[in-house]
Image (cartoon, rainbow, N blue to C red; front, side, top):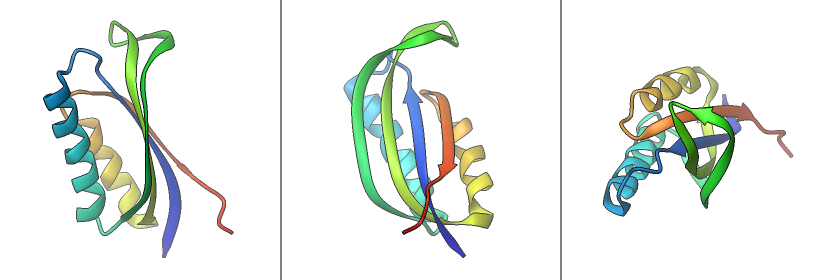
Length: 97
């Protein structure tokens, strides 16, 4: 059964624009490979963090609004966790209409 998720990813601010695009494409690829669909992608840009994460005071925020089979969500998180350039991620279930 597919569910709607809000998948937030924080990318390292040290990435060049090419490396950032490559990392974002990798995350998008993981989602589609897992059988999910991306309904919307918000690139919020570089923002300061409330506290340091992996010695970074800021990060590039990207939010993916996706539809994915519930059994694949954990697998997706494991893939993204090991993606170079990703410093933090969070996947939450959104309410369905």
